[in-house]
Length: 80
Image (cartoon, rainbow, N blue to C red; front, side, top):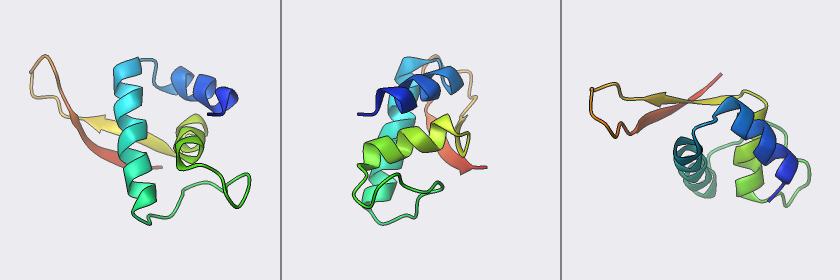
């Protein structure tokens, strides 16, 4: 895991459980063949690092459901 991308992603999404959920969902999407929103550093860049880089560069944000429930879940990931 690229610690630089992790720290920059944590600056954008300081809520750690939310960050974990966003990264997890995006890694699943990338593993299913979705195209990345940023240029990979290398041809074989890990999808975890790619998801962190997308968040760190502000290309991906989380849209949470505001249902009033204590544990709102991620409705969608939005590309900017």
